Length: 175
Image (cartoon, rainbow, N blue to C red; front, side, top):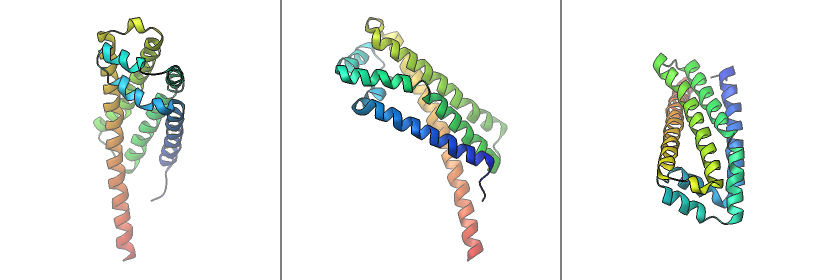
């Protein structure tokens, strides 16, 4: 099975995503777990406690990650959409599935941008942290994760199935 143009674009887009993800992890360092905790806080008290438990250096790392994370949503949206195009090229998807796989990453990325802007704002305006804002932002975060990871899971199973079938065909031909 030869690599198509769509496959090569997927490989490149995935590499850019991975570099971006590793860089964000590097910037966050010891505060990496804070991201998930803040995104799933669902109450103002919990949100404040998470931020209050960070020291000055950790707050600065956490703040810096937001700037890198203003590029990152685009990287995962492009990679997921490239995956949908590449899979569709090899195993045609239904129009509905293709539409979902092309839309979900864009909606997830938009949610990530909303989450980043709100998170950065609340970091500097702690008096604005209230239950309604935290719940809404956590709901956006949860939706983002479901859409992004759901797309990734669907694409992964599609590619694994496709590669497995190609491998079995190759084994049968050589036997």
